[in-house]
Length: 198
Image (cartoon, rainbow, N blue to C red; front, side, top):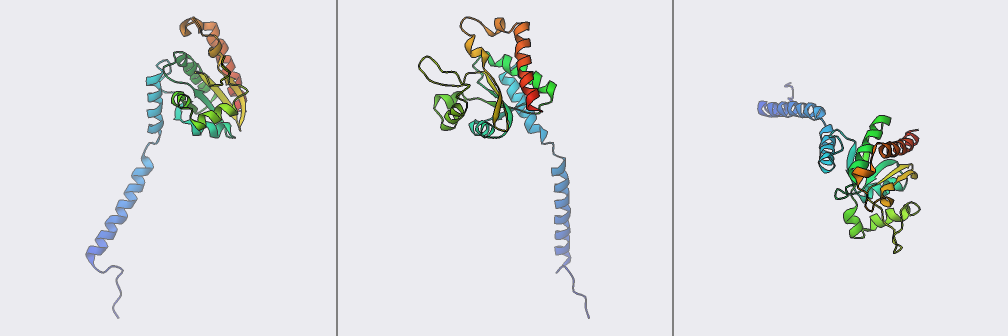
């Protein structure tokens, strides 16, 4: 009795063997891809917006939905602001240095300028959830200021920083952020971040 062949022809056998080898090769290649490149690209993009922050930074770009999920019960360190605000460079730089020192691996960056201008519903929800921290202007309107840092642990705000929103006026960031003030800001961030990683 003649043995039945697994393949109908040698051509079919060669085709299946080729596809098998190709699949193995693809698995090996995909396994060696450095997915860190996406993070590196984000950190370089952030550095291009805020040149005081080193290229090798911890910032990842986020949107209102990401921030709302953190405020709603997750955990995260969030820097909120936008590049046209000259105070952001200092906040971003100091926060990145502190986060690296204490071992934080990621800082969420949320540019809320358009969302605020368009009264985006998700942005408004974030403001409402943070209303005990968000300043109210002379017209009774609450809006997040740029820059603002929030440190949230399992939905609980353990740090809210927006001190430059009350010191502006004629003071420039270059004058305000003398060595003493940088040290004060650094220590404030550090206290909150150490609590965050406990």
